[in-house]
Image (cartoon, rainbow, N blue to C red):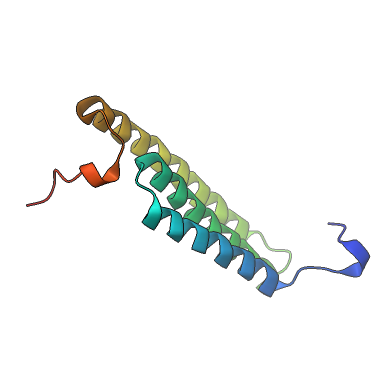
Length: 109
């Protein structure tokens, strides 16, 4: 990439970005009441992990693609998770007429 005036991001920059995304995701999971909002926050968490994996692997082993393959696997698992979660949310919405996660306590004993 062409970075301005010879500046190039280091591993610390990418890790800081991953940590920021992870923090945003944790905040979203803890503060959202909508199931879809919680799902989006979980996706942000997974993408932060993928970014961190790629950044660390690129800095430790430049020119190798194993880190990118790991991130691709994380993205594939996240896509499958979204498909299953959306099916569950649609079913819950049809039965309860709400996506509020505070009302989803049917598994409590």
